[in-house]
Length: 125
Image 1 (cartoon, rainbow, N blue to C red):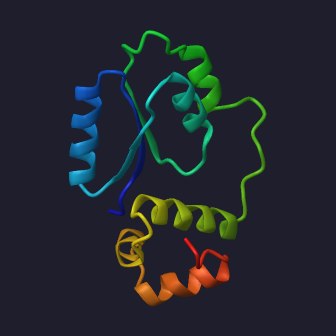
Image 2 (cartoon, rainbow, N blue to C red; image 1 turned 90 degrees about the horizontal axis):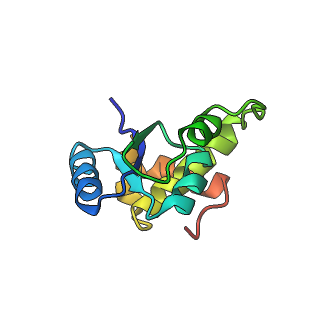
């Protein structure tokens, strides 16, 4: 099973860090949001497979969360090339630019990754 891209929204630092550590140890790409505004922005960002939410977060408005996750006016999906480019860029950010690690996480060879970096103009990442 390929690694999942997860967004963790947990207010308690110890709970958030424990989840982050556990999910990363399992080979998943897990990110967190430091506060409510960042969480609201991150929820709307494409590229996550799952959202882990601490429902005890006091300022979390469940109605707005539902809207963010399933907006009434759905946008047209991106092309496969645009989605792949965004995913590769996200993976490179996660690995701090380490192309070998990024290729491993993406499940492709390093030479294939280098080809895609040239194709999408991401060589400098």
